[in-house]
Length: 270
Image (cartoon, rainbow, N blue to C red; front, top):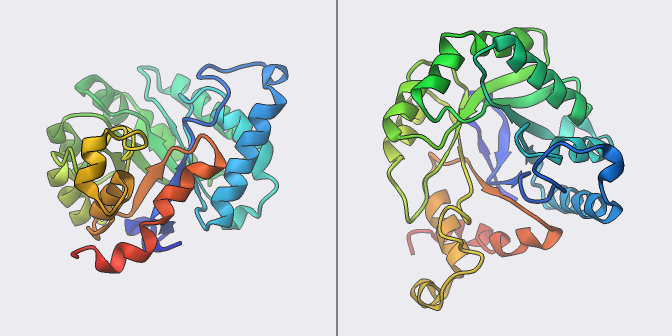
């Protein structure tokens, strides 16, 4: 695995991250008794494979159903200091409701703190106001001062203008955003993040970046001799402003194709 400094967090971030929205049992919270043994066994194997590869950044969210709870059952098997754990919670009109959701996340994860906490989905002006005017950011900052959160950032599917506006508040340590070969519109936001020395995490480059895990034959032919996923990974990571790409692994083998990128990084121009 290769690692990059994740902006002013100073974390050494693997260039691939283990995203947690595909290996969970359900998209809604469940009674623990309802989680099938085979689902948990697969999740545990996926996390083990991730860490064996040196992908020690595990990323999830309150909005990913059973992901946090299922992760919490396995994280205790590993040394906490070896892990970079990130979760995300959506802002609310009531900042105390937001606080309760963060506490729920930490309880499900069975962690005293998370390394990275994301304001989840600053996608419109209303959510921006919930964050910066209604008190949600202050809640996260209080928990940061209490040692429950190490670094605060945000995730977004918004327009570039709103992403840049959020970055330019100077309040965020990192950003999760979309940018890849087929959609490079957010480069201006990445430049703004770089100026703020923020970490830059690319959301879903192989899924939203064109369903590259099941590419049409035309795309396969155009990308030869590389697989389209490897082509896209190489394109993204050839830019030093990009620190990590999310791999939304549903099973242990989902990392394998991406690993082909690593020995090619020194030959990206070629």
